[in-house]
Length: 144
Image (cartoon, rainbow, N blue to C red):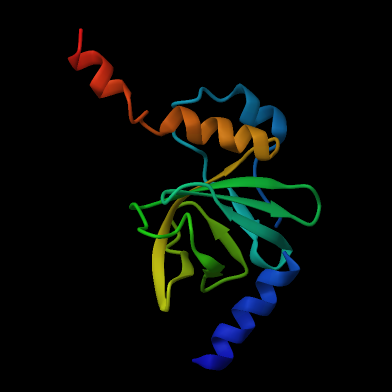
């Protein structure tokens, strides 16, 4: 088990690779269901947990991806040691791949629902902002 975990970490340090072209991503409506996009685990350069539901991934060849988790992963946004646990070299939407992360002293796992190609980090953050309910919206509606 420890050997497998070490292998996953080594693979993650090297890293990303298949998916739709930038033009296809730009033309897709914001609310549309993402295609079955993929990336190679060994081509991932780094991760950034944007929220407890979204993770931005960037690769060695300038690829950028937004991962949407199947559920809210408590503690993911402030976690350390994010890694991908997949049975294959590629991670695609709905293929049962998992994100593992350390929240305090506890290792947690969270399923990846979708993988989307994005133009860059800013595009990923824009999608997250559009898909995340604003905390103050309900309060302002109630006051009217």
